[in-house]
Amino acid sequence: MSAGPPPPADGAAFPFAGRSVHVVDLSQRLSNATSAFEPMPHEIEYFDHTDTIAVAEAKFGVGAEHWLEGRVWAHERVTLTTHSGTHVDAPYHYHPTSAGRPARTIAEVPLRWLMGDGVLLDLRHCDRVEGIREAHVRAELERIGHEPRAFDIVLVRTGTDARSATSARCRRRPASRCSRCRSASSARARHGRACRARAGGSSGITDTVFTNR
Image (cartoon, rainbow, N blue to C red):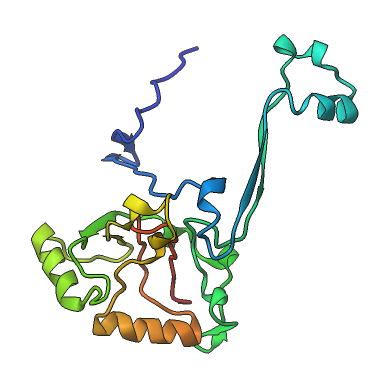
């Protein structure tokens, strides 16, 4: 039986659903070093192949002599919240209702909303205090020659990722100041509604917010 083609190299393009796709994981890597500047700190306990010998004996009655080279499994115990690191915010996070109906929980967010072509907007030049304005977004869309489509996933690059793993300054990034985003943010505060966009690789704390529709 054939073993099949080798897996693609990390970051390399590969065929999927009839076309060539390029997948980049932009998730923030969590560690105990990143916990201190998270609003809701997490904790990771690491257990190596010798730490679990006693566990294997107590739970399964299998001593170290029965394991290859006397080494048992390694694992981590992770304590975190749904807001640790890179995550998705459902409408329910902001308010129990949205658009006059019960707000969707994260389990009710359609998977289709989480899958789509990425559109990278390089807005590293935007000042943190002045913020990202509509003119910035329109200029960048024109520069890359892209017209937004349904289910596009917008990735806003602010450059904050360069310090996301080392400093609480990771939260100090330029926010949107354009009129459309201001109205969306206001609605989000009241009903959990906002533009469907991701800030990939731009912040140590990344919130993705969806409308309830």
